Amino acid sequence: MTPNKDSPNPRGVPAVSRGNARGLRQTPTTPERLLWSSLRDRQLGGFKFRRQHPVGPYVLDFYCPVAKLGIEVDGGIHNALTEYDEDRTAHVERYGYRVIRFTNEEVLDRLESVLRRILDAVDGL
Image (cartoon, rainbow, N blue to C red; front, side, top):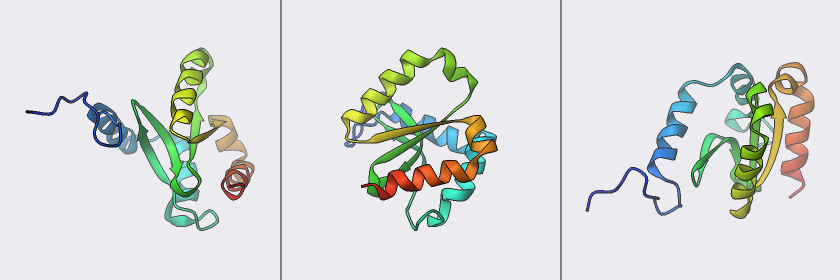
């Protein structure tokens, strides 16, 4: 039997979500690129982070496996997607993940504060 591109793999992630994550990793936004430059290579408190991590049909911008912490960086479009974001967060939380959100402006203008909040969330296991 040939796998359907929408069928889940053993972790419950549809193949289409894995493909979306791959594409998102190749085209990060400026705030995502900036935040990733501070999270990658265990720079923040020695914690490992992944970017564009699929969870079910959704993709988290960043994910810290040891803390099961998802980090979302939201642009202006998310002002109109409040219900979608709430559903998405609820879905991800059913997997036992916590999600924290930042706006693009927070990342661009107050990166140190964002990093401190992320570190507090990861340290607060």
